[in-house]
Length: 365
Image 1: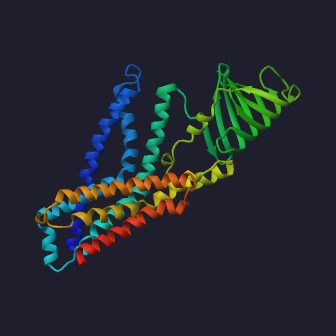
Image 2: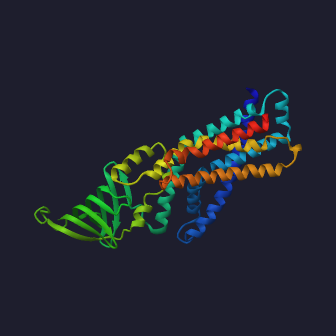
Image 3: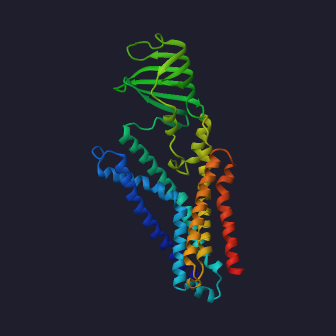
């Protein structure tokens, strides 16, 4: 057990070092990107640094498998140079048993990342999107999905209009049982519209079966209400604005994803991309384990055998290849080309089995 704790401690310190290096590099790169994106005369340097600090955690979370494989390579290279692996084998312990501690640490890092780091990334990503939109245009997201249905917001010269619908199509451009509440610039209601259906076309909503209540300047809105079989309500919303307002699945904490997926289904939207993301998050700890096994398979050898550079390069390239295969499988799953379970679980399971085969071949022939 003492040897396992020793290897585990060394792996944790190596992972922390590699993670810190990537954090510093990505923070500097993101600050430069924010300086290019926003006008420095309108957004201060402190605000740009805060934006970068909110944006970097998502990038770190996405490349966590790459950080793990680089940490694994660095760990076993250090152990090989100090001949600690040779001593471990000479004491009667196989290299496979020496892998128990790094594998368990990687599994623990994966579980902690999904359970703790994921909600933190979701909160920072959501705050970054809100601040960047406010700095760019002064507007917040135009769409929200809640238990009550779909909510939209649009602006005009006269004020703001809040839109609620019980159901919608996949891109939010066709609403059923829609309600439009218009407010003036002082926030006072001036008009209410109820419609059976509302379809977004260029520059307007086309309302079918619309009833309009004038709320401003009328002492009896019901008496002054009007019914229109068809009505055209001006709008500055576009399909792209509605689609982009959904944000990314990473902006939702994993603990809230099941409820959000259920709300999307009830609102009539496709939740496939969120289901794929949820399953891939559950498979992340096993993905990290596969990275450890791949890195160990190429670097658990003494440096006197030579070709260390080639073996390290092979491990890193294979790890990067698996990382991109995982992302490619995610795209296929989101597009419906392959089942969701296959897209999320096939890459890590296949990588674990292949790397175990490689380790058994190299250690036992």
